Length: 116
Image (tube, rainbow, N blue to C red; front, top):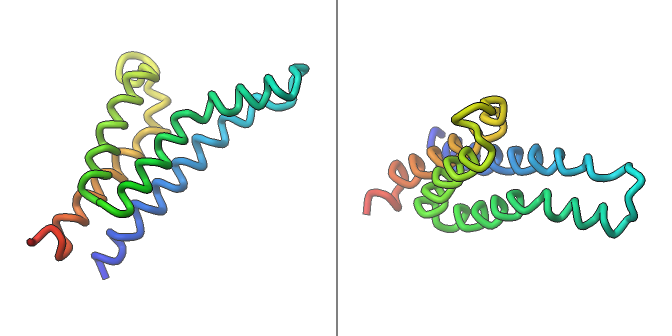
């Protein structure tokens, strides 16, 4: 039962974190800008989201590699968003990425794959 929770919880947490980050990119719509410029802004705002989707796809198949990449992305995004020096509010968005990465790694080592 615990392994089942450790299997699904990081995946659901990563999906929710990705959707939460994607929600913030919706603020580009509604201004007086042309539609093409708004779509460009939307795509540029979602570059971190696209990277997280790619890492989630990797983690779904290879838990240890994906978990390590999630943890590294936590630190990279923390540096990018200045989370460690003055913008500590962005840690609310980034902490689920760290937790998901740690849980992917933990599940890998507790499951049969990690015991080989």
